[in-house]
Amino acid sequence: MTIMYRCKIHCTIPERIVDASTVYRDLEPLLQALLEVSALFNGWVEHSRGKGPIPFTDRTRFIEMLAFNARQDGDEYPTAPSAAGAGANLTTARTHKEWKATGCTSINYWPWFGQLTMEIDAPIEAFGESEASVIVRRCIAAIAQTVDVEFVSTDAVGPKPEGKGYQTYYLNHRLFPHRRWLGWMGFVPVLVPHRFIPEAAKMEVVKGRGTIIVAVDEPFDLHNPDHIKRAHQVELRMANAGLLDVTDTSLLE
Image (spheres, rainbow, N blue to C red):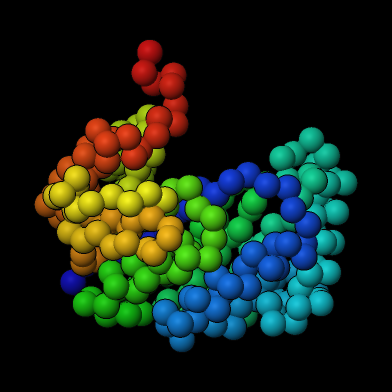
């Protein structure tokens, strides 16, 4: 069986400075959509600064906590990008023990940084070898349906070949050091016919939003050269189609 410590969905979103109430309103439809994907995506909390976990369902306290955090960060780091805005760090782990639970999931939403991430621990053990890819794809669809996203990619984290430490697709295997990357699967906010990227294992239209592109339609194995090759082939096609923006022009010099 493929060993995957975790997978991480990276979303690029428009940079916005928003208040705590807006952060809550932004996240509400996403969490509802994720609950329809799996019952594991439930019981979301944020661990407050000194008052324990605050449930997302406790709207008033949750918004007050986000506002307090934003004010505190603004006072302590007035020149930081986050100084004027709120964000959220959600998890399904309400206790220290639950951080180690199979399928423990975290969402970091930082509008001021233009980023949303969703990290699922041990997705194969949580959902099974045959369903893990389906669940991750449905998570991407839920994000695309409820969040204004500019690009989505998915990283896989697993053991190094020698067994000590870990490796990721992004750090150790991505094709382009100077461009966006897709990894296991992702999303672009345009309609892309499958014939444009024939190497993709699956393409799925998110109505009115764009296209999910799946490089490998099974748990991504960082030890499988065919998986790495397929991801590279898909990313090369995407780059040629103008779907992988350059992120570091200094590497082109």
